[in-house]
Length: 176
Image 1 (tube, one colour):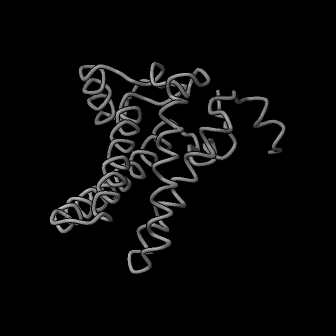
Image 2 (tube, one colour):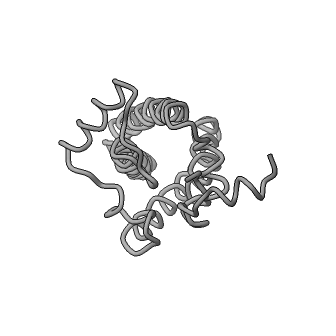
Image 3 (cartoon, helix red, strand yellow):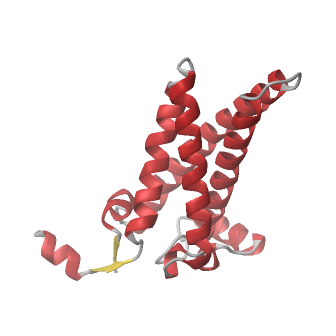
């Protein structure tokens, strides 16, 4: 099947900024995690991550339709309903992020923010440095767990809805 026929049956969902920020977070978090022993690199990548989180937050307020938080922030009842449907392998289809995916975005952004802020505090001077290092490590490890859940959610959703969400996050397009 040609790329043209796939494009004819797809719709633009995620704009370039959302995709660039997403993959930048993937890359920079991996570098940050791998560069613990190289504090100069680790520190600057941490600042980049904080900048990306800030940019994504602003874009979540003023960006394109599917980039806005208002498009994918659902009530706890809707998230619970979606997860119940997911367990039965009959979840409602959402063109943008589903309720579980929307919740994961918020939780990941908060975890990255917590990791970054505690990293800045741990980099400071004073008697609380060790405490902030421990909290920073807690947030970083928790973020790894969230990333694993996010990847599993993408796999499950891709299989159930018979769509390639990873490709969609590169191209910005989802099948209709």
